[in-house]
Image 1: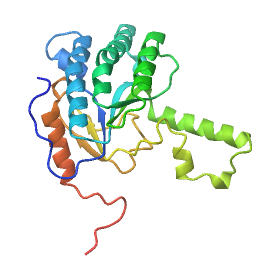
Image 2 (image 1 turned 60 degrees about the vertical axis):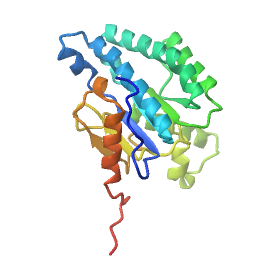
Image 3 (image 1 turned 60 degrees about the horizontal axis):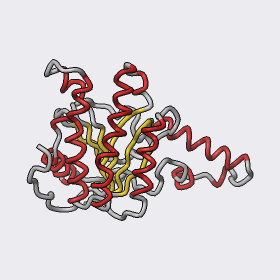
Length: 245
């Protein structure tokens, strides 16, 4: 049920949470339904988690909506995902805008159908001035593709004579990522139990805490988000250092 009563977890919350929304297909298969039924069921999870992230005043939420590898799925499923994400944005953008959520797109623009790209651009433009939750939609996104695109941009800068090799550092490189102003995720959540990052935010996940749950995405709600946050709060983040004392 969307919007269940779950209190904001006590204590310091992660500023940025990223989620690999996995398990839609398995959810459908266990019910002898077509895979697209799982994607449809996942809409309630998306809506509830975005609302919770906004209400709990997180800084950023990144959702892995469609990867560069997802183009290899059956054409009927790809076509459905294009229309599903377009319709979801069109249906929810007014609500998200009213919640002061700023929507950003992370990923390549090529291959995205014009109608879906229009919905993305409309959501980005409508919410551009908002100052609440940064909702990053990773669509036609791949971590390796993001790094290649960043390197391409740096090469173009060097070719213009605006960058010397010795001037390149992590901060300069980061400026060429899709959304460099968004801080790295503090917590990565993956649903459906798979133990991999699937080419997601390769650069940004360097020191991110990872939480994997067996819950399939269509069943994931804010109570599960709260559980992930509490687990995150129990960990000690060292960023490569050691505990003193």
